[in-house]
Image (cartoon, rainbow, N blue to C red):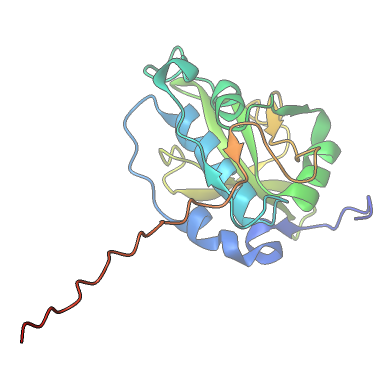
Length: 201
């Protein structure tokens, strides 16, 4: 895919399978934005055509492998993504790199978005250029801090570009640590012997 950046880009148009994920309302509990943003991005990553074979299945993650779940203070999208994929997410630097990642891989996670309540994690799934030339990020927000689940916010404001994470692509032919590429086990059947009728003269 070329490095050319269009004036507007929306993952819902580029990857239509993502629409149900990006447009579904989320009723989160206070303090779980880090979890919702990470899982939303991961769901989009799978649906946008990652190189995971279609017969894969997620391996259950034991609680000790998710040490960052449980509280807002301990929960960070970076750790959630690493726990689920086995690979640290890539930190994107600058607006152009974020836009290229959206075009290449789909939604990304911003973990330093500033709200009156403090730092907040959101999903960036596109951008647009307004009629007056202003660039706006398209954002999915798990707690609707702007009054809606999906909204636009200007480039360079509220720290939205300070820490942005991309889910890495698999490097070994489409396998991620933590994901078992073997097919689901097939049931085995042992035929029971059919009793033969006995006749007595």
